[in-house]
Amino acid sequence: MLRILLIVLVFAAVIFLFNRLKYSRETVREKSEKILPATLVRCAYCQLHLNRDEAVESGEHYFCCVEHRDMAENESSR
Ligand SMILES: [Zn+2]
Image (cartoon, rainbow, N blue to C red; front, side, top):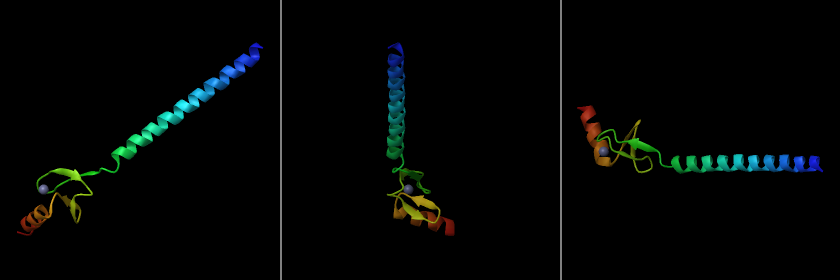
């Protein structure tokens, strides 16, 4: 009788640990998914940080708006 109780206890412990592991892995995945889509880039002209989706890309640089891209290009060509 004691042996059956022991086996049941071991099973319960294994299931408990497995669920905890699964839960913690899911929360880590949720957190990384929340962080990943909003990749911040810096405007090469005014140093403003903004979402990469909203940034104006020019070569290897990012800008907050078309005006700053043009101003940076004019300064570098001078
Ligand atoms: Zn800017």
